[in-house]
Amino acid sequence: MPQARLILDELKRLNVTHVLSVPDNSSKALLNLLWADQTIEVVLVTREGEAFAIAAGLWTGGKIPVVLIQNTGLLETGDALRGTAIRMRVPLLCLVTYRGYAKLAASGLKVSPKVLSADLLSQAGLDSAAVLTEPTLKAWGVPFDFLHEDSDVPRISEAFRKAQSLGQPVALLITRDTT
Image (cartoon, rainbow, N blue to C red; front, side):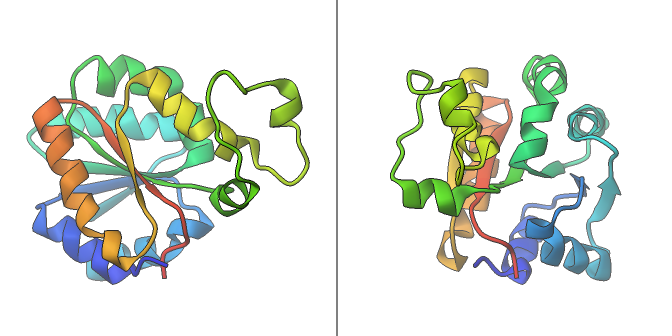
């Protein structure tokens, strides 16, 4: 499990000014640490799509925001992500907690748009949000990578740099709860 302290340290190295989030159990430890540390301003939003609109505004104003949401919320963001962060070419790091990843990985299912169906999405034992996460990011043209454990924390900086060089959002999928 990735340690929240390591993630926070990496965000500080990147001079992140704001983290926009809808709290969830997977990111609880990181959010608690962010609130205690107070170096980076935490902005709680009511809906995940709102996080992208506010992040775009912060970026326009010269700030360095990061969005921290769950994959279920990522699916909710559709038009806000497309219409603001992607269309405005906002170089935005998106930390996305990946609810349902463990069961999806254990199933051995290789998800692609070709296998998506109502039967698959309603299959007992699989979280449909997990099934849809990667195909949705691909459909939106959002590059992504994975943060599974502490040794993957440098991928935060890599994803951040990629967002900067491409001038667009890049997602880092956090597959386990932060501790």
